[in-house]
Length: 112
Image (cartoon, rainbow, N blue to C red; front, side, top):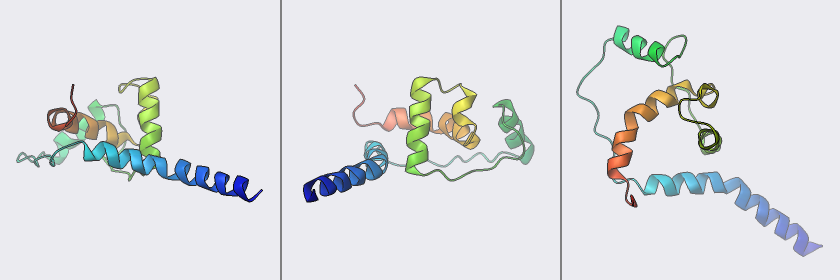
C-alpha cells in the first residue's frame, strides 16, 4: 500500500511539473533575446493592428502560466494558429506570436 501511495504521489508530481519542464526546455532551445523594435507605434496604429487581428476592446496583455501555454499549444496543434477558439482567452498571444515567430525561427538551435 505504501508503494502505491508513493507511486501515485510521484506520478502526480511528474504530471504537475511537466508543463513547466516542457516550457523551460522549449525556451532553452532559443538562442538570445529578440531585439526591441526601434519603431514606436502610435496608439491609433496599435489599435488598428489589434482590431485587424479580430480582437475587441482596448489592447491588453494577460499573463499566461506554463499550464495555459501547454493548453494553448495543444489547441493550436489540433486546430490552427488562425483558429480564434485557441486565442479567445489570451488574445494578445496571437499578436505576440506574429511578432516573435521570425526571431524564434532564426534563433532555434535544432532546426533541421
